[in-house]
Length: 466
Image (tube, rainbow, N blue to C red; front, side, top):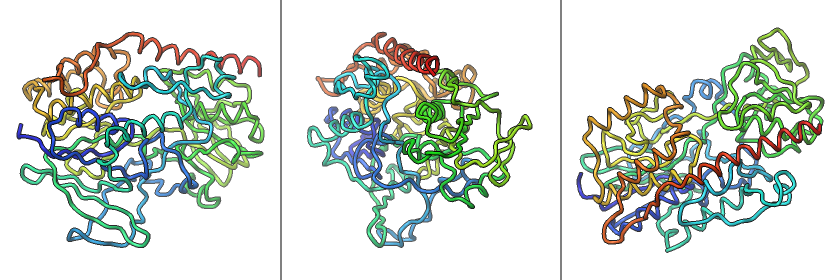
């Protein structure tokens, strides 16, 4: 590998924040630049100050093509009219949102998440509740970026629009939005770390009549990332689509608060429940479980079993996200995952391109730390990769075991094996430089599992009382 002195990091969420520290502590780079398209650190934990945008381009959302690369000015630097294309940068925060797993498996090994409990969480889970309000997590991430002068490395309100290899350099095209025009320019780097996350672009399945429903009543169809609390659904008839975490939380929230008009209609029958949390949330008596939607005609939602519900006011899709890399045309996303990533980190076609956070739900923050440390160590020249054939074989064997889709990115339940393999690859560092990764602690996994059970216990208790 060529000597790496200039590194670009895309994103200042939890993955980007820990990557800044991992790179800085190697003391091997002349330039570290971090580009964050939002106004502050936090990623999907950053709160919203404006109303969410209305959904559009339903065909693109369903076909997973909604977040397309933009047309760049012919010459750079340049000023150009403000970009009108939706970029889906808003986060999934509502006022009373809390973490859904214990804070212990979320925090980095050397930086503890503050023990701050809300009255609501104490009421639901007891005085020792391990869950934290979203603002605690955002401030935690902010504190990581603000220490040691790291904030000077970050360019906020700056979107990475194109990343391409030119010779031995990575050409990065950037855009900063102004009041009247956008400004585009180019910077060059020896390596790029992608820490931009994959919970931005909503997936909304193709359903006959859904766009017409939204057009006649703008704002009547939302994705779970645009849910801003139960108050908007007072006295409304609501259908929630999805059998996983976000749909469960929203349907349960609406049912428990008795906000809606009649039952909450949850489209879950015939769909797999979330691997971690199961389907207990949908057993509330205020939730009417339904099969898949076959069509929407006017305000009537028709289900595949021939039944229907009329006078529907809102449809909320908790149907997951589409992984997009519109800024990286040379790296295609396949089956909603990024192929050719060794250990979910190293792009094996070019090891100067690395990813932090290219995994599904789990001990995510800690996994980010292990991945960031490996990436930093490799770029500093203090760790080595196996031969390309071995890296390719790792992916082939994982595809054979997990499939060539999202399940490929799920580390559960093999956390210990993965953490230890990445720690082995990263090594201890040299001359006291770099982050030090401790051995895997099974208590992290236990706290993760205990958090699931605590939430399921809460659902069972409240459902029984109802």
